[in-house]
Image (tube, rainbow, N blue to C red; front, side, top):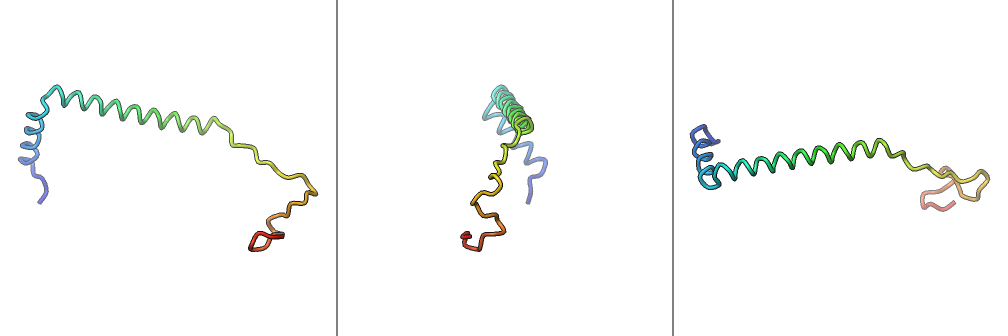
Amino acid sequence: MGLSLPHLIVLALVVLVLFGRGRISEMMGDFGKGIKSFKQGMADETTERQVTPPPAQINPPEGSAAPSASETTRNGQP
């Protein structure tokens, strides 16, 4: 029950009559620009992630009163 070739041709003709050749080409151009912009945004985000170093992890000084993970119990109390 899929679309056969004659159905697709009739559908294409109806779309062409409704929108006209110029409007369809304009929509496809806008669609292409959108895809190009999306790919550029993804590439910018990827390079931005690679350039930005991860934040430095702050370690407490030795001998501090903060318990380590092995010294805490289930409820988080020392």
